Image (tube, rainbow, N blue to C red; front, side, top):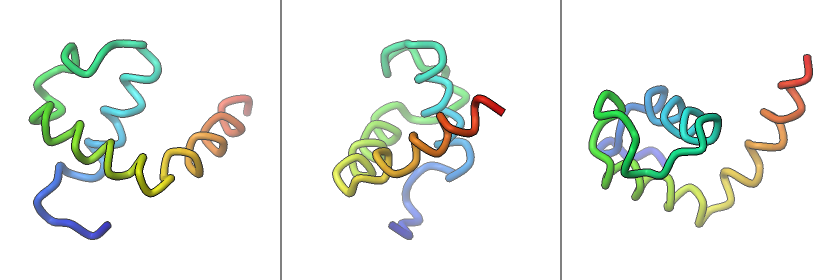
Length: 65
């Protein structure tokens, strides 16, 4: 991706993980994670390229340890 106009990478991943754990919709995400529209765009862009399909199996496997 390498874009500089998106959210901070670490904070972005924390927001994605928080949403997954809490099971909340995008609109309920805390403002501390940044602009919701920008987060949604970044999430969607990564989904389009299959990033989440590659990442989440590893996170799920690591959760059991």
